[in-house]
Image (cartoon, rainbow over all chains, first blue to last red):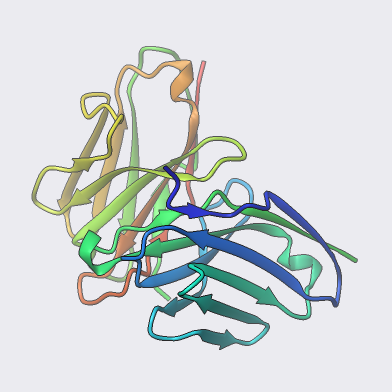
Length: 113
Length: 117
């Protein structure tokens, strides 16, 4: 039973355009959500996070939106750059579960020059 | 930001041997470290939670006698793959959380690719 799902395994975007990566979750106890970026053969690096008490968090080119009623979050990257090409994982945690992270399956983003 | 270092980054071993992977938090104390495994083109799967000074908590389906975890200090956790077999070949990643606080943000090591011949 996948509690965190990223339904798009890959996404291709032109440089300069917006990249939108989506993530859905089923566990209503999740109260903190994170996005990680991962290059091949490297560990994930933290990108941006959002608490369940917010619906938007912005950091430079990256914005995360949270729709609690729909149990859906998305990561917007604008403008997209070729260096953004990587696999993006969304993750969720809950205070009740000791803050362990549950990861989605990842979405491979390819930004074309 | 916080730094987590893993060693070795790559290891090739013969079937039946044991391999140890180290995970260190370089500039913070980590009471809790996590070990993940990633198969090609798949997500990160949590294997176990390593708690300093106590036994690790393993996820369902993970053999604790095969994947030995030791968290002897606040800055070091080790994963030993015992009697490795080709099916153990994978990318192993550790992560750590600062002892003081937390909201769930983890810092990840660089990962260790294990190839068992």
